[in-house]
Image 1 (cartoon, one colour):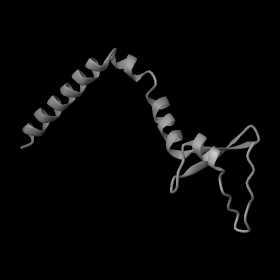
Image 2 (tube, helix red, strand yellow; image 1 turned 90 degrees about the vertical axis):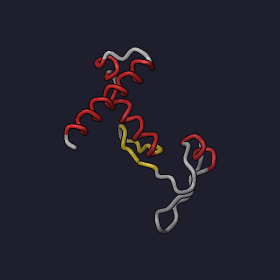
Image 3 (cartoon, helix red, strand yellow; image 1 turned 180 degrees about the vertical axis):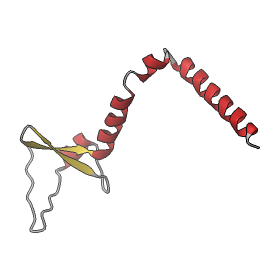
Length: 90
Protein backbone atom coordinates (compact mmCIF):
# COMPACT_ATOMS: atom_id res chain seq x y z
CA UNK A 1 0.00 0.00 0.00
CA UNK A 2 1.27 3.47 -0.89
CA UNK A 3 0.28 6.72 0.79
CA UNK A 4 0.05 10.22 -0.71
CA UNK A 5 -0.83 13.55 0.88
CA UNK A 6 -3.28 15.99 -0.75
CA UNK A 7 -2.12 19.62 -0.95
CA UNK A 8 -4.33 22.66 -0.40
CA UNK A 9 -4.79 22.85 -4.19
CA UNK A 10 -6.00 19.22 -4.34
CA UNK A 11 -2.77 17.91 -5.81
CA UNK A 12 -0.98 14.69 -4.91
CA UNK A 13 2.38 13.19 -5.74
CA UNK A 14 1.96 9.69 -7.14
CA UNK A 15 4.53 7.43 -5.44
CA UNK A 16 7.31 6.09 -7.69
CA UNK A 17 6.22 2.45 -7.45
CA UNK A 18 2.65 3.36 -8.46
CA UNK A 19 3.93 5.44 -11.41
CA UNK A 20 6.01 2.45 -12.54
CA UNK A 21 3.02 0.12 -12.30
CA UNK A 22 0.85 2.58 -14.25
CA UNK A 23 3.62 3.16 -16.79
CA UNK A 24 3.38 6.94 -16.45
CA UNK A 25 6.09 9.58 -16.47
CA UNK A 26 6.33 13.35 -16.27
CA UNK A 27 3.73 14.98 -18.52
CA UNK A 28 1.60 11.85 -18.98
CA UNK A 29 -2.10 11.95 -18.19
CA UNK A 30 -4.09 9.66 -15.93
CA UNK A 31 -7.83 9.11 -15.82
CA UNK A 32 -9.97 8.47 -12.75
CA UNK A 33 -12.78 5.93 -13.12
CA UNK A 34 -15.50 5.06 -10.64
CA UNK A 35 -15.81 1.28 -10.30
CA UNK A 36 -18.33 -0.15 -7.82
CA UNK A 37 -17.97 2.83 -5.49
CA UNK A 38 -14.17 2.86 -5.72
CA UNK A 39 -12.07 5.35 -7.66
CA UNK A 40 -9.45 3.75 -9.90
CA UNK A 41 -6.59 5.64 -11.55
CA UNK A 42 -5.48 4.42 -14.99
CA UNK A 43 -2.87 5.45 -17.55
CA UNK A 44 -5.01 7.34 -20.09
CA UNK A 45 -2.97 6.17 -23.11
CA UNK A 46 -3.16 2.52 -22.08
CA UNK A 47 -6.90 2.85 -21.47
CA UNK A 48 -7.45 4.45 -24.90
CA UNK A 49 -5.41 1.69 -26.57
CA UNK A 50 -7.46 -0.96 -24.76
CA UNK A 51 -10.67 0.73 -25.94
CA UNK A 52 -9.42 0.64 -29.54
CA UNK A 53 -8.40 -3.00 -29.20
CA UNK A 54 -11.82 -3.85 -27.78
CA UNK A 55 -13.52 -2.00 -30.65
CA UNK A 56 -11.57 -4.05 -33.20
CA UNK A 57 -12.10 -7.35 -31.39
CA UNK A 58 -13.39 -9.91 -33.88
CA UNK A 59 -12.75 -7.73 -36.95
CA UNK A 60 -9.86 -9.88 -38.22
CA UNK A 61 -12.07 -12.94 -38.11
CA UNK A 62 -14.95 -11.06 -39.75
CA UNK A 63 -12.63 -9.94 -42.57
CA UNK A 64 -11.10 -13.40 -42.96
CA UNK A 65 -7.64 -12.32 -41.82
CA UNK A 66 -5.83 -15.35 -40.45
CA UNK A 67 -2.21 -14.21 -40.44
CA UNK A 68 0.13 -11.28 -41.08
CA UNK A 69 0.32 -12.00 -44.80
CA UNK A 70 -3.48 -11.68 -45.07
CA UNK A 71 -3.20 -8.20 -43.52
CA UNK A 72 -0.39 -7.21 -45.90
CA UNK A 73 -2.43 -8.45 -48.88
CA UNK A 74 -5.51 -6.52 -47.70
CA UNK A 75 -3.48 -3.30 -47.34
CA UNK A 76 -2.05 -3.74 -50.85
CA UNK A 77 -5.56 -4.24 -52.24
CA UNK A 78 -6.89 -1.12 -50.47
CA UNK A 79 -3.95 0.92 -51.78
CA UNK A 80 -4.50 -0.44 -55.30
CA UNK A 81 -8.21 0.49 -55.14
CA UNK A 82 -7.32 3.98 -53.90
CA UNK A 83 -4.82 4.51 -56.76
CA UNK A 84 -7.47 3.44 -59.29
CA UNK A 85 -10.07 5.75 -57.73
CA UNK A 86 -7.64 8.68 -57.67
CA UNK A 87 -6.60 8.05 -61.29
CA UNK A 88 -10.24 8.25 -62.33
CA UNK A 89 -10.53 11.73 -60.78
CA UNK A 90 -7.39 13.14 -62.43
